[in-house]
Amino acid sequence: MARRQHATLVLIAWLCLAAPGVRADAHDPRWAELTPQQQDLLAPLAGEWNAMEPEQRARWLRLSRRYPSLGAEEQARVHSRIHKWASLTPAERAEARRRYQELRRLPPEKRQEMIRKWQEYEELPEHDKAQLRSRGEAK
Image (cartoon, rainbow, N blue to C red; front, side):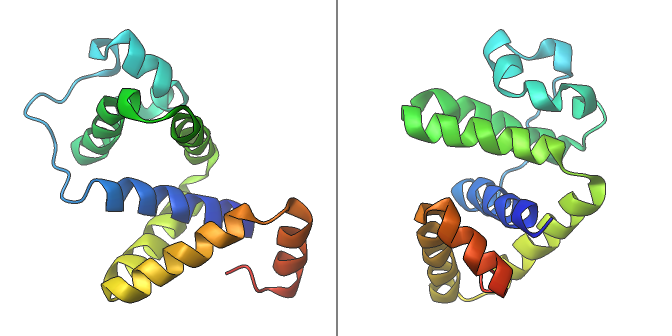
């Protein structure tokens, strides 16, 4: 679960830091109103889309609009993180949101340092990550 929480924290931080101040669009589309491209990208969220809060949908829509302009590697990362987010339980999502709020309250330089450390961790070989997690240092 710790691994999922870390991945989720990164997803939330990436979505929120990349798109601060996201507000609901004047038009808050239902799933059937999304473009085929948006539905393809956001497919893991299809079952819950219509029940989401407008602000949540607005964040996902903003991401879907930016998605085509991203490089192939970043698109793959976004796609993977959407799938990871969709697979989280409500409790895991709540924990990820809580962690994001903690991250957001940090001074900018501390926040950047944490993001840098996370990026370094993400670049480690899986074996090294496993060792760090077993020692509790992957936080």
